[in-house]
Image 1 (tube, rainbow, N blue to C red):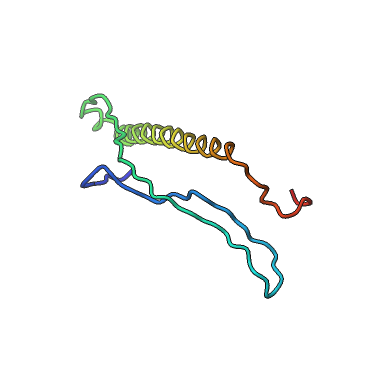
Image 2: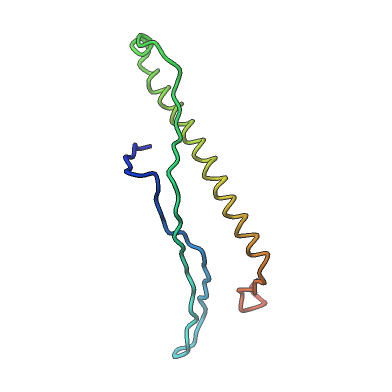
Length: 117
């Protein structure tokens, strides 16, 4: 984890919203299929994920040099775990929204041949 200095907590990024791969074998000189790849701008806010350990006497660090690395590893693990939970729940919400949208539309088969699928 690297500390980040931000002027504002708001940011934006581009997220793919459509992926329609239409690659196919096309005879020479014929019209090629046009694939569609769309992105949408998503605005979001930074969130702070943090925690501290309880107070540890300085002498413990002097007497046990490995304690600092142990404590650093535990704190880093705690952050990584929380980040993975936050990211997973966010991804699940997006996936659920996509499934709901797909279920409400009639989706034609992408496969041009009944023998390959």
